[in-house]
Length: 256
Image 1 (cartoon, rainbow, N blue to C red):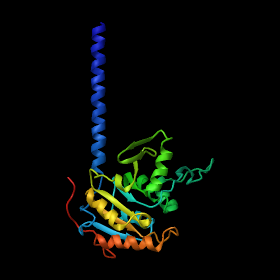
Image 2: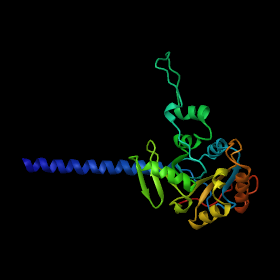
Image 3: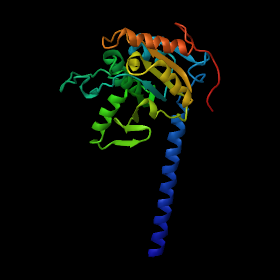
Image 4: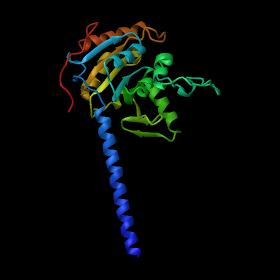
């Protein structure tokens, strides 16, 4: 009697394990199928999509216009500002029926898109499924010190990994940069050149063989913290990778 019951329990456990494995495989397969890629190569390649924009909001609009989805986003920024999405909208305790349809992602795009929130909104709308953020050394050290007191932080040779509402984020210094396992979207702000040179960034990208299908350089013309010198160094970086003022995407190799 007990032997028969034990066999049934083993059979149920095996069936449950197989169901979980099938669900995981199916979900992973679906997620991969939703990722959009275009022609990719090094950032110096003229065959990839490369553009200069004036504001972070324009960078977001460019990603949307290209139909990018489910991508890893590699950012080079000179500042990292914390945001509080829970305070973005004031939801009244009582509302008149019938209730209007509320789409959180659309509301974010229409009402809260700015230089501090655009990366977060890119994750909510599905453009990005993960962020890798390269920041100046002094800001990284400060962030890493604060992260030591948080439960969801992990440290490695690639920087500090911090999840946010399930979103994987890695913060790093330029010398932490490693070769990503897939083509990434690359975003570079003029503020990054406050403490780095165009040559240092170009060398780092070449060293780890970054592959990308979309390079966006942001002049940050609406940010009073960014100096003319930083924008000039962004322009020098653009020149170093062979970018004219306006470049459109061409077709090319697709990832396997």
